[in-house]
Image (cartoon, rainbow, N blue to C red; front, side):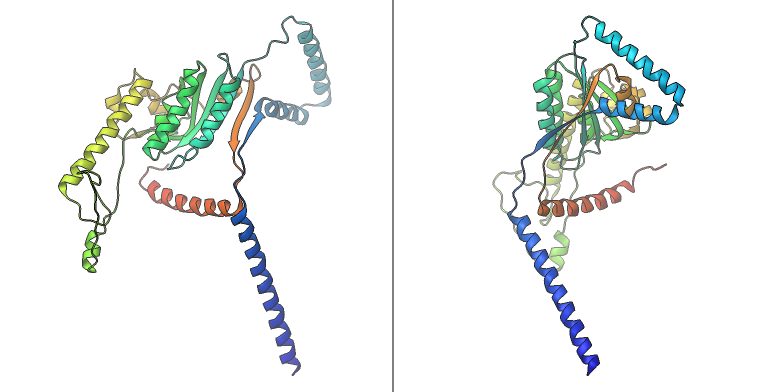
Length: 340
């Protein structure tokens, strides 16, 4: 009897914990569903101050006491000399740094447009914008808009530098070629000036299982190829024609941004490491974004500009699931690439 009593008590406790867990989860889900998406906010951080702190910390760790005292005296002397100089109040030019890591649907362009708008409100022609770009490409309209956003900087007479540390391919290169100065690391993937469109067709599977599919359109080429219907040569030819037209537009755009490049030689859909891309005229110089930033410190004031939107719980869960799906997809696509 004592065993049954203990067992019943255990079951009761377990049931209580399960019920409590369900209540907590239900409450979280309820709050998440009611919570509205917060308004975005602009974050401007001084990279110059970060570099200054790093430098000071490194000196404190590496230098001995005598060297530190000598350094402190030199810094005081320099500070007094600067304060006596005429025109000391003249502000330094600024380097604004934007990070763009593009996904297949290029939804990051919504943040990019806010960041660029903020910079254009305060920047002058002595300033410069550095975009640290990373993208393997994606939808045509999304990356077309992203490239147009970057063109806004040049239209205001502000120098635009784009640095590619890892990859700028297809739509990513459409953005990158807008730069006045295009940088790439030695082994960054550059190029892929081409257009890709693919879709499965389940028509044979439907027929095998006696499933009919109907699709009604108005306009001869409203739908050229379909996933479930039976495709024909005429539709395939039209679909191919549309792809070729987009490719021509892509090539014309790149050529307009980099007129000295042999577009027919590079617009084959191929991509190259940065060092080869420079030889082909796809980029201007081989370096990393870190080295470029350091080359402007301390002569310029350097700021990171980032626009972010606070997401609610439901959106965070949805984004996590979407990221997992995209990583799996990209992993399967990357199997066809060369690795070293």
